[in-house]
Image 1 (cartoon, one colour):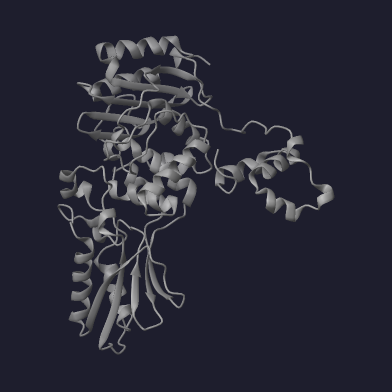
Image 2 (tube, rainbow, N blue to C red):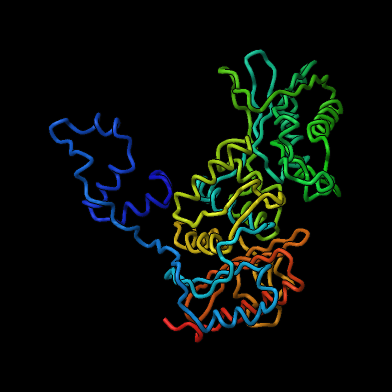
Length: 436
């Protein structure tokens, strides 16, 4: 389960009875802090507290299969390719309806984005926006900072340039010299280490930086984003008669105490960011959401914090390994049982609607728009696709007459994965196979 400060536990706390709520607060708060708030004579020894009540509204994924008919259909569908598949199908009560190699770790490709977006949504909330900010420092210089807005573009840069020149778009006097610092991540942190060098030249493998004009991609990746940014800023200001002195500083260095925020450009809201990552499978946005959710752009630390959060959710973590936020790193490892449990957990989350709405829709939207058109699956499966060499994965929520079903199918080497996944989804949609 999430820490007490998370929306999920705040929601849980409100639903619990008074006595149980007190138990949850005591369990979640630091002992030292409680000692300051409760008089010594009223303190209750922790050893005497009753055990915590079970989580309300958060069913756990069961370990035993409960639908032999669907299990038989699953095995018949994969036939001789069973060894390269991991498949899990569960329902909203936590019943494990069918499962094949569900605990075997697989390369998930972009199904990894389901993890990053769930984490970011829980940590940051549905109203969060990424901000790009212009600061005035005490010595009269300026600093531009960012949080990786994937839609940062020339119009926003021009507004920052005008403000730094002192005009803000009006007819004020232009200073003779504008000293502007660009705060950016070190070059060695622009790409996750596990990304193949060849991928880094393509738009989908663009470097992950804080100040990323058009997500650091044009037709291909921009290999030196700070240089491009400096060129664009300098051109804008020189055209307006200003002399410019641009410099790079580390974004990990704190702002001076005398810094004053002059202006900020917010990104699209979290709903748009989630949809960009999940519906369109945008690697850059998924990487940014992981880092912002963790509160650090140190990828190793961010993945560590994400793993701690996942463990707190009560998910089956055996074999799970997080290497990046997008799934482009082949060192990622997820299991289909983990993904099904994550989908079930997020369906119970206070922000579950926003999470579901961020996914592609079979036959209608995003990376699923061309799949299962004209079948009973069209408009009924909300999911995330994943594709890299030798890997095909689809995980999501399937609407059925018996309620939602949580499906994860990962192949590492299947011959016709889309056909197999389509057959599996249609079998899972048949609610008569698994009566309540």
